[in-house]
Image (cartoon, rainbow, N blue to C red; front, side, top):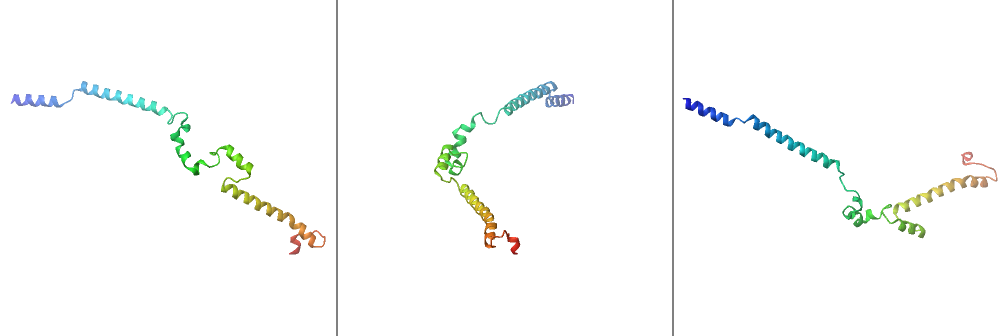
Length: 134
C-alpha cells in the first residue's frame, strides 16, 4: 500500500508546476510583452507617410491619368489659365454659367433703372412711377 501512496505522491508532484519555474516563465512573458508594447508605441509616434509623399508618382498617379481630376481649377498649369483668360476662352462650364448669370443680373438692373425714365417720358414729362398708375 505504501508503494501506491508513494507513486500517487510522485505523480501529483510531477503534475504540479514548480512555483519558481512558473514565476520565471511569467516574468519572461511580461518582459516580452513590454518590449513589444514599447516597439508599438515607437512605431505609432512616427508619421504615417514620409515627408514629401505628395510628390511621389504613386500618390499622384490617379491625378495624372484622371482627366476630371487633373483639369480642375488649382491643378491645371496656372499659365494655361492665364492664356485662356487672355484669349477670352471660358475654361469650364461653371465659368459659362457664372457669366450667363452676371449678364442676366446686369439686364435686370438695367431694366429696373430704365423703367422710371420710360414712365416719365410716356406721362408727358411728369415724373411718375408705376405705383401711381395702379
